[in-house]
Image (cartoon, rainbow, N blue to C red; front, side):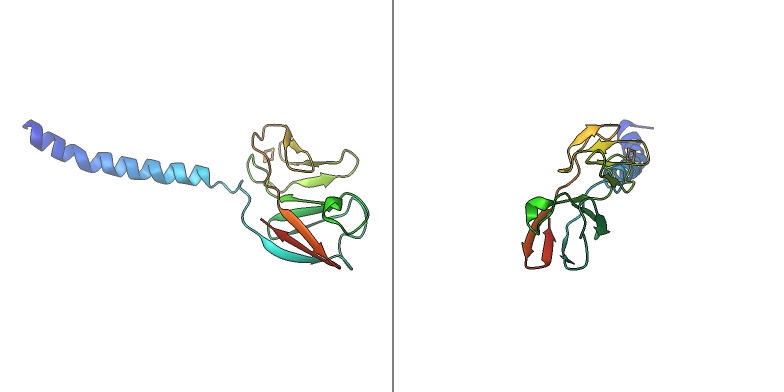
Length: 137
Ligand code: FES
């Protein structure tokens, strides 16, 4: 087999292998651990009434950290852990988010404080008008 024919025959398997690799790579990059975009409202006349209460909506966990219907009284971060995507919980006693799967912990603003997660949670912006909270990010 001459060199040109050899390289021509080599091309197809190499392209196929690259396509498989690229598919695998993009799959691992989108393993569900990133925070998606959100834009929704919460009725504060009936939800998140007590300090320490939380709710999950549109892939976001929102927690009431203090009294008063002002943005500083709340935290909104992606609900899926940045490690493998498990839904995190808010722990009022320690004032942090905890992943029940492997124990990663995050501050109320989403910063990692204990691994194995090594990326912060996405934080969403909260605005409030009357009893209507809007979560955007
Ligand atoms: S999925 Fe959260 S720590 Fe592993």
